[in-house]
Image 1 (cartoon, helix red, strand yellow):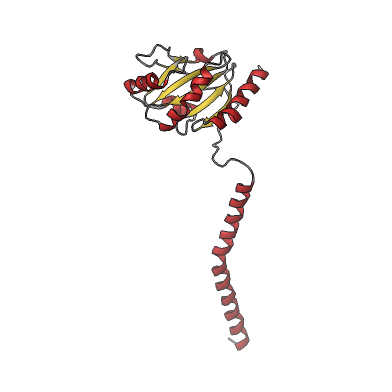
Image 2 (image 1 turned 45 degrees about the horizontal axis):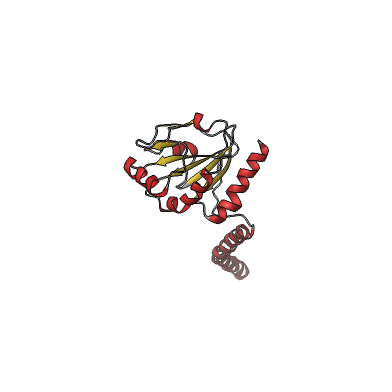
Length: 196
């Protein structure tokens, strides 16, 4: 091998080392650009999209909360009414935080508020509702979480606004606070009422 070809090979090896050394930096810069674009998009990154939005709500055939005066939660209980389906449990701290807003909403005759009691003990659920008040027109018990899976529940509390025709119009993952109650749920309800 001539001296010139040796230098050429040596030079190529040096460039290869620089490219390999620069690869992590290039990958980092690419990922940083993607993350920055997402952050600056204005989209709420904590919002979890739902494949069920705009589709018919899954059927409901849940037994009643034993000891409650409220009926079982069935598809009939929500048919023909604008309904907020709220998934809750007595052991869920954020459920306690949003409960006053559900009580307030239950006083609005235009909206039917129903509950799915998720993986809870019957006596604990009764104590929870006895202590905080019962906003639900119907309560269904979901002891093994099957209904929650059908509805695409990520974690509780979770709420779904279902139109009179059974279409899921709005979904909220996590608890309502006064701000999300006024700026998200109430506008969704008003929009649904105008459309019906």
